[in-house]
Image: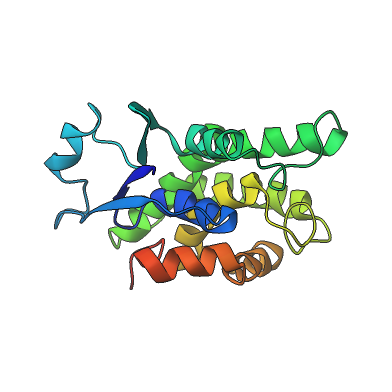
Length: 204
């Protein structure tokens, strides 16, 4: 059985969501955040950078949520969380999947971190985020999710960043993305993951 090292309020919920969709159990080891909202030192004993999520499987240790999600779909021979290989939608999906951490996360955190600290959000950071949320709204299209009504890996990957943006009321000017967040929260895998491990974003 896979062991998942799961930090509270973290990207680890993405992994739990996919495992729930696949009907696969895991041995979950939970780690609470410190009072400063950082990962505890004990995670550094699991991964040199103190990362979460990290999974262990057959003696291998795998980090980075995008890699873990791809690993799990390969391990369990799942073809339901990506469009058909070789199609235009498949490559659009791959681009969106990688976009989350390669492009969106850095921009989003420049707004989320000041909001989390109760500080004013810099105008240039908010403008940059608005540009990305407009891009995301176009990617959602007719919705309710990125590729219709069924969640793909890219939806699961996006969920954590969108959850944080919603937590700090940063979707008010982007109704299509807010509706997308509502749709994500109705997915059975999301519901199972958050019931098991708690919410993705810290409570108010």
